[in-house]
Image 1 (cartoon, one colour):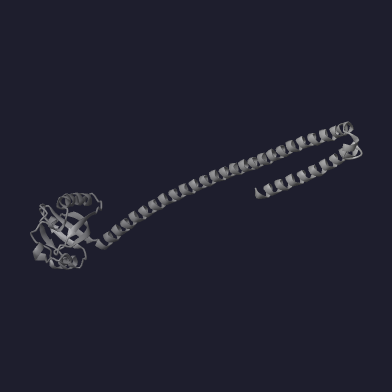
Image 2 (tube, rainbow, N blue to C red):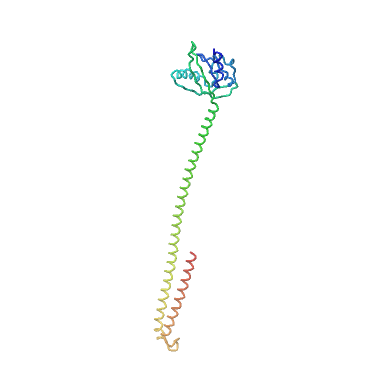
Length: 252
């Protein structure tokens, strides 16, 4: 069917060229079919759909591609094809009608794009992995931001509690010091009242006693002595209380 010159040209083409009839049975092919592991004689008379995984899709595609070519459009369809040993390859398929024959025949071209298809597939897989990594990274970032927010909130609450505790301790210390001071003032007031009363009463009591029972010649001297003792006692008590308060403040 193909003359000798045309046959040489066709055989020099790297793509697989196949001529099929209207029922898509193979009428002729070039020598590139050896790339699929077949000889020309092994393919003659067989349906071209045997070379593909998707037989039904391939059968529909050839007339559609030929129609597009007739309308001046160049369209390609990618199909997964089978070699003789069962290996899978990817090929871009084109088809056009052969006008030189009386019957409706098609010239089908299979262009091997396996490496390109595998590279694209690997690229898509890498893209999916990258998107997954980015998604996980975004999730981790949100979790980290949430953890930092929770930690900041906990620190703020702890600082507030610490401030309240310190204020409560200060109030307690101030209350204790105030209570101690109030108690000391009450004791001092009672002592002063008692001693002053004693100093006032002694001269009158001394005047009523017989001369031989008087301890001192003058009751005024005894009252003065009591006032001096009162001053010493007050000074001593005040000094002791001040020392106690200072020690408690240091302990606090």
